Length: 365
Length: 237
Image 1 (cartoon, rainbow over the protein chains, first blue to last red):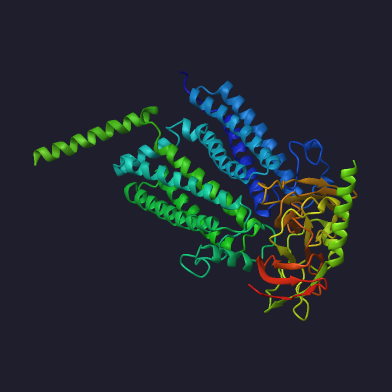
Image 2 (cartoon, rainbow over the protein chains, first blue to last red; image 1 turned 90 degrees about the horizontal axis):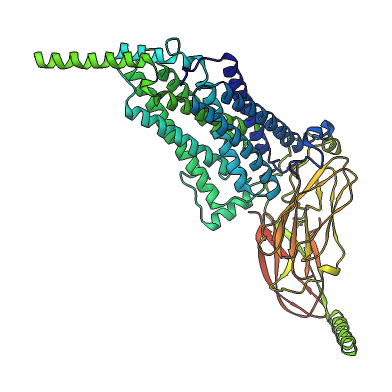
């Protein structure tokens, strides 16, 4: 297989697609946060118009968010199609070419799911649409990472940093660290699904206070209590009644948030302790990750205190997506095959020599 | 043919007899306790809606008079099914005016037409979201431009507070209770209600309010040819 060479324009295009996808997540988040997902009753048309010809004078109220979401989604679809085609033609790594193809099919599926949500009136499709959006964003960001100079030219980029870190600290990325990265990232994805499930039931805040829940550590969820909550809440937009399941979901969301925070904190502490070299890429990444998750926890609390203000709730979705992507980056770096480049072999040789020296020292004692 | 004519005659006679002996149920619904303050509706970005309301719109959970008179309460007889005359009843008109649904709370019979009018110079989508879909009530979402013809909806199954919403203006809601008989009324600003032409007999009567009595407050009532009178006092939840 020919060696992969850094293609700056391909990488820049992948970054552009990732940024456009982040913008799409933001607009999509605003659609749900404002409760206007059904403001355009038809699909793929918009109020009977071809969606690209829908007059801007009619983009009023919730139509503005939903129609903008559709237009940005079309743009991301186009960018993804070009990126997939470009990868297919220019990329020598076969698996990466196929990742491009998967991204293309994912964006098509995502568009169809968005349309079906509108015409079939199914909240469940909205939840799947939101979860796939997160996975798609992570995939596009991964494509941007995998086409970067940092990734492709190890002597100049991240692998050098990693090797230098190993040489100075005498440490490697252990299996337990990899497992912790993978587990935390998986947990973040599950948390995003929980969040999407809460948002796409269009019931507003199932629990209106924080850190307590209806004034207690654990709220009552019997039928009488839920009926009382519904009678007492004064919902302005998202007016579906809340249920015991939704209250349980929000409690689960809070608990999982604590677990994620502990995991990310543990990772940052552990990597800082075992990989003290400043250039070690995972060291910086784990600090960034922990910071993002702390910020995300704050946004979660603010979402409740602001009575689910649309901009705050959407920021919570976006930082959630960035937390997932950071975790995915960490996993990719952790699980990079050690024989993928020559510098890793140098590091392995160094490690063998180090172990032999330690063995000789023990024998000579 | 003769048999049909005879049966029709008997039916007309029976109906006329029932109406002659039927009475009206009248009464008033009041609210005990101070309701929570209504919330201001924020995020109104459509200039047509803003122009229609010099002061901010508010939610309409508790529409209470100075003496506690409670509007938007559905009062109906309970336990009667299959008596709907909705197919021949006049349609209920819901108007979208100033980016609000009027009325906020209404009631119809199963099979009775609901006409939705757009009096605003802006676009709306009319989106009923029934819960009793198993009974045949159907969720729909229809566009309605300014000046467009009225939209018509009917629902075959009974359901309380069937929500109509506009997603273009996500604060717009109307709650229509669908009843399988004609014996119901919705209280006005004075809290008063009149259920007309109820055949004499003993019934259960229920008052439903979206916040104060979502599941209903029941009472027993006996209706005579002179009618009957009964009041409800609901508690703030």
